[in-house]
Length: 144
Image (cartoon, rainbow, N blue to C red; front, side):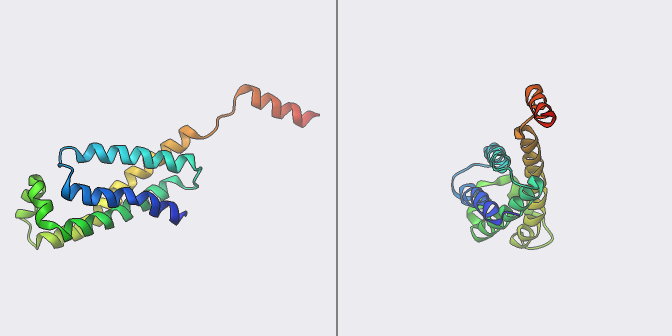
């Protein structure tokens, strides 16, 4: 596993962690994540990274750490701008911050699996395909 690539691509998650607290409204957040996932999948595939799914999964888990820490640290500010999330934690049987800390990694694994699938598809799409002429050239080279 290329841990340097995982850490570098997880910086998108770090940026989103603070952006969702201070700038990005809840209704725009999914679109931002979609763009980030497509971009990360492309980068993983373009670098011909082995095990693209595993890299995507790891990025999702690291992203969840960044996001959970930021959302727990800036809880009041985050909840003020995210009424749907506020409603979900209002009736929670435990502290809302503890609930976020427990559900964050689960969401990270799920989003990492989605990113992993994106990376797997991107790797398959970007993999060089054999053309008829390249197959003919290689068979001609073997017979010579």
